[in-house]
Amino acid sequence: MIAAFCFLAAVMVAPSSSFAFSSDTLRQLADDALHHARVKGASAAEAEVSESCGLSVTVRCGEVETIEYNRDKGLSVGVYLGRRWGGASTSDFSARAVQETVEAALTIARFTAEDPCAGLPEKEELALGALPDLDLCHPWDLSTEAAIALAHRCEAAAFAADARIENSEGGSLSSQQGQFILANSQGFLGGYPSSRHYLSCSVIAGKGGQMQRDDWYSTHRKPDALETPEAVGQQAARRAVARLGAKKIAAGSFPVLFEAPLASGLLGHFVHAASGNPLYHKASFLLDQLGKTIFPGFFTLSERPHLPAALSSANFDNEGVRTREREVVQNGVLQGYFLSVYSARKLNLSTTANAGGSHNLFLSPGAHDLPALLRQMGRGLLVTELLGHGVNYVTGDYSRGAAGFWVEDGEIVHPVEEITIAGNLRDMFMNLRAIGNDIDLRSSRQTGSWLIEAMTVGA
Image (tube, rainbow, N blue to C red; front, side, top):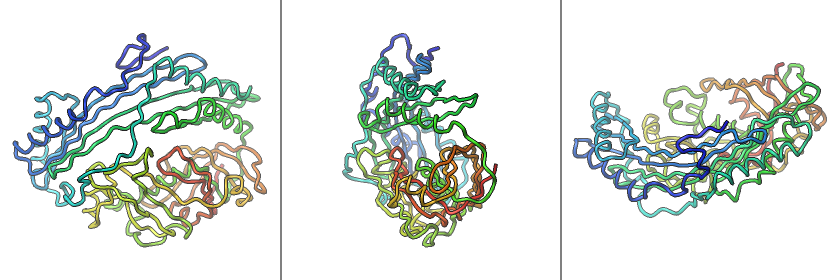
C-alpha cells in the first residue's frame, strides 16, 4: 500500500527542489518579530524562521510501500523581560500570526520567575560580520520515479547478493533540504540552506529455521557522495548473513571491541555527559573533570565546525555564537565541555558555541584496522549491535543488550546473540586499549573501532 503525505502520490512528481520562500522573506519575518517585541516592551528578543521540504520512499520485497512528501515551515520567538524569558512558535507566517506569537511569548515571560542566567549572548560572542560559505546545500533534482528506482536497486542488490536473504524490511531513500534565518536584538542575523540525503537497506537472512536481520546505510549532504545502491544493499546482505548460526556464550569478563559505528555512540555518551544541562544539574559523572585525565594518553578528540559539506558544520550555534576549532580532549585530558550561553553561566564558565550540539568531532585514529584489532584482542567479543538504553549518566553505569561475534586467537569463531554487556563509562574510557583506523565516515562523530580492556558479559 502506498502512503501519501502532503501531496497526492498518484501525481508521481516530487515536490519542487526550490524553497517556497526567499531568504529575504525569512529575514523580513524575523525582523518583523523582533520589531514587534521591542514595540511591546521586550528588553531583548530572538527569532528563528525556517522551512524544509523533502521526498522519502520505501520499497519492500519489490513493491512500493511508502511515498512521503514533506513541506514544513515555522517561526519560533523568544523574548526577555529583564531576566524573565518566554517562548512561542507558529507555522503561520501572516503578519497577524507573527504579532500574536510575539505577544504569547511576552505573556509567558510575565509569569516566569527571574533567572539570573537568562539572556542573550554577549555581543562579542556573536558571529557578526562576513562568514565563509561551508558548502552545506546540495539539492537533489530527483523525481519520485527515480527515487523509487534507486530504492529498488538497493533492495534488489541485497537479494541478489546471497540466496539466504529471504525477506526484507525495505530499501529506502530520503532527500531533504531546509533553510533558516536566526536573528536577535543584539544585531545578529544569519542563516543558510542545507541538505541531507540518505539511502538504506534492511534485510533478513534465513537458514535452518533461524532468521537474522541487519542493515546498512549511506548519508551525505551531496547526493553524488552517497554509496551506490548496490553497495548499500550488498553490505546489508553480508551483515545479515554473517549473523546466521548465532549462539549464546558463557558469562564472564572479557575484552570487548566496539565496531566503529557503535564506537561513535560511545562518543555520543561522552558528549552528553560533558554537556551543560546534565552538568549544571549535577547529573553527570564528568562534573568537575575539566583538566583531568579521563581517557588514555593516545586519545585526542577535536571539534572542527568549519569543514566544507560536513554533516555538522556551522559558522554559529543555535544562539548565534561563533563556532571555533578546539581540542575537546587532548592526550586524554578533558579540555572543555559542550556549553550553551545559559549552561555556561550556570557553571560560571564561557560558552563553547554548542547550543544545539557538537560540531564535527574527530577522534585521532590508531594504526590498526579492524582485523588487526581482532588480533590484538586475541580472545573476546566483537560487538556489532546494541539494544536498549541502559546508561546512567549520574554514575556512568552502562548495561546494554548486544549481539556480535566471539573471537578466539584473533579470529572470528561464530556469531553471538542474546547477551548483555556491562561496565562503567568512566572505567570504559580509561580502559580503552586501542582505537582503529576503520573510521565510520557517515557520522558527525567520526571514530574507528574501540577496543576496551574488559567488560562484564552476561548470557
